[in-house]
Picture 1: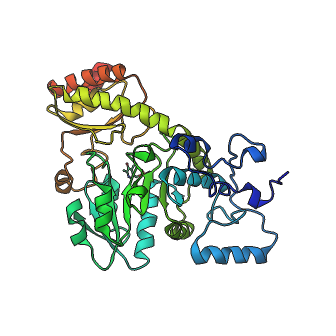
Picture 2 (picture 1 turned 180 degrees about the horizontal axis):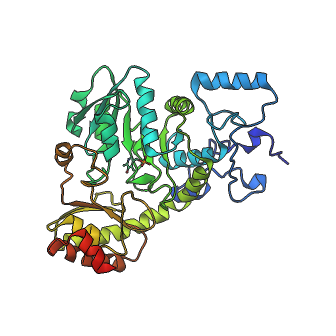
Picture 3 (picture 1 turned 30 degrees about the vertical axis):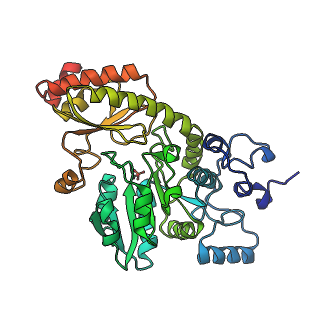
Amino acid sequence: MDTPLDPASTSAYEDVRTAPCRALATEAVHAGREDLARQGLHAPPIDLSTTYPSYDSRAEAARIDAFAADGAELDGPPVYGRLGNPTVARFETALARLEGSESAVAFASGMAALSAVLLVRSALGLRHVVAVRPLYGCSDHLLTAGLLGSEVTWTDPAGIADALRPDTGLVMVETPANPTLAEVDLRAVAHACGSVPLLADNTFATPVLQRPAEQGARLVLHSATKYLGGHGDVMAGVVACDEELAGRLRQVRFATGGVLHPLAGYLLLRGLSTLPVRVRAASATAAELAARLAADPRVARVHYPRIGGAMVAFEVHGDPHAVIGAVRLITPAVSLGSVDTLIQHPASISHRIVDAEDRRGAGVSDRLLRMSVGLEDVDDLWSDLDRALGRGRAETPDVKGLHEALN
Ligand SMILES: *Cc1c(COP(=O)(O)O)cnc(C)c1O
């Protein structure tokens, strides 16, 4: 029998490299768990260690030297919690399998993941970023404000090739984009990038609907806080990429400390197991709601992606704030990808930090509402929306008066 103390026999990756290609639904429940049965386990263990016994310090020195050289995942126990964690590694293994990439590196949030990518590129002197609007509000802010010393050129997909410079380290797109659900042709964009790595934020589509690595994106970013976790109770980010970039990302994660907590790693691995089912069910409801909204005279415009998905954006003729204030089943809240339905006003919340002119220029109108459709019954959701839209069309009630009326 294998002894669980032998790191080679307990590695979560060992079988993954040799496993035959399996369907997404199968990977979702098995990837990152290949070693469990042999260990006599069914649920993955949560390793909360911040440090590990190192009886052979000469061997540890050699392992640390190897990590400093290429950032490869350490064989055996991680030495210290900032270098790696076995529970988090299971999630990374599983996400890499779902995205069809060689590796994945998890972070404390989506923004920590994006920051690490920018630092990896600017450390090589490649500080220039070419990006397509809209992006998630804080990603836009991070680039526009140059908080990490990067410099951004905003362009449309057709302008990418012309915007590249010798010091361009990254091209960044979101598709479908937050919050307008605008789509870009990833294959065409990847071609325009030439040798510059393309980062595609795949938070909205998830690997269930789209695998950007297959279309030429070298980096696939997720706010795992959204669909991957899927229940609104864990914050995380992850980058799926080739092992060369993953090594640099692990080195930056080690040096800057934006690590994912092991409990979050556990919840994310559990979230992945239902990802295909959740995304498909919520997408079917979202498509139906998008159709009903498109047929509604109170709605000026509906945005729903060609590839589908569980996000719907729409512009109302009336007051968007009144709709937000009137929903009862749907929660008026930022974020997305949970089992319950959320709605928010991007110009006030998720994209408030983007300069108003830039925001409107990116198609984020002041009348736009963004809805993340959950797993509730479609007719229950529609009656809530229908009633809330009625409020939106009526005279704008002041919010205080509305609260009093409802209490
Ligand atoms: C939420 C979000 C982010 C940021 O992720 P956090 O986990 O909140 O840091 C990045 N990109 C997109 C598309 C998002 O929706």
